[in-house]
Length: 589
Image (tube, rainbow, N blue to C red; front, side, top):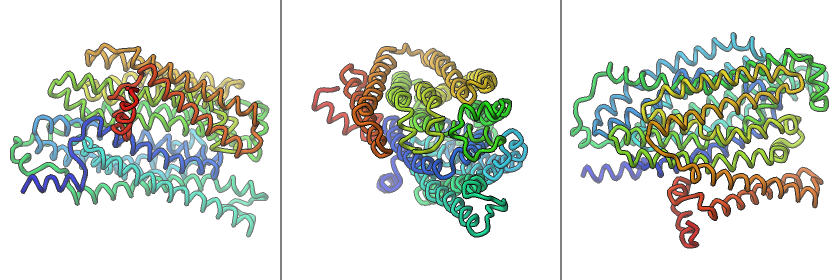
């Protein structure tokens, strides 16, 4: 009877104890879906609120990330690790108690984080454009909602059930899309309506429609961020309902057989000893975005506006001198939004690997430790390398495809080329950090991130302040930061796990296939442009899509021909088993 109840629970609520491959596949598929929804949100949003609005949006988001990180980001990993270790040793009472203790911690940190962001925003705006305050205030409730949601995500991830996390992420993304984008469009339409009826826009007298739009941008950006906050509330509601309805799938027999749980004090000390170093490591990573928000705009203010106008003269229509730094910072973030697509996908691999690797580490299962580390690094490389080099090769066409006619589609091209190369390293940072945390080296990412952030701060301050380089110096600081972090992290992880890396299989073969992929994209687009020419936006868009399809085909063929992808690598992908069966029939693996 108990077994039937257990089976019924699993059928309804998902399977507890998913393997690394299953968990990674679920999270990867969920993350890809979330990124598609996010692109559907951010690409139209950029076209609706423009470079200036994106500047306000990005400034608020840059503050949100470190505040949320201090409030919660390290603790889901600590929760997942403790739950995974306890269940691996049959201590199910401890697993549940860890969750109860963690919930109280998340409640307190969520409230404090919300207050800190809302109040700290009034200090923060002295370093960025003052009109960013509306966006900061609109985004601040999300800290609380995300903290509470994280208390459930971390628990289920520790039980190796990635389905709740994936579903809540999709719900959160859909809420952001429909509510956030809807509010942004509605606010912009309202600003245009009031201009036509009274030559006013949000309390500002305006003479032209363009001025009305400029006056509306701060509020439209705030509306889009309010949608993100409400999306996180919807994700939290889903988690509460799911947990109440299905529970955690730990059976009564497992609870009865487990020893008495440790004290709350012991759990809390262990929780903070794991979580705080992880949070600090993530914090320093997020601080790089704050460094961008603060240093870029401040250093651009030190450059004579007439110099910047002479460089970007055709793109500055309607932008006053005092708004040039925010405008260029917003244009830069058009490229950042595209860059972020890939690391967010590979981040799912790290989330899935942490509980599996932590459980294997706790019981000293060397074969599983080695296979988990190798699989996560390899699949991150297989995704990140071709995506990054392809982005570098087609930087201009991609921006024109997504943001036709926008100044950022030209301003951000050289920056996106550098960011494309940065994807090779950025896609590895979070998975490697998660694995370092799983093997008891949670302080290492903190130290490396501090050094990396210092490198970025120095280069940002130096390069952005040079008039001829200006905003184009920001991605150079970022790529230098990530190169250092990834190389140092890999060396430490391999030594800790006592793994001798296979450089040819793991890095060199995927890099060769990725270079062929980028060359195919560049050559295809160039050939089509020479034969057909960009006669219209539609033709240009079709040429870009064809170049991307050809590049994907070339990468797939080359990586299979040179045996750069194994059966285990493919199984980590969504629908991996079906892909393996198809390739096996053709003797390609």
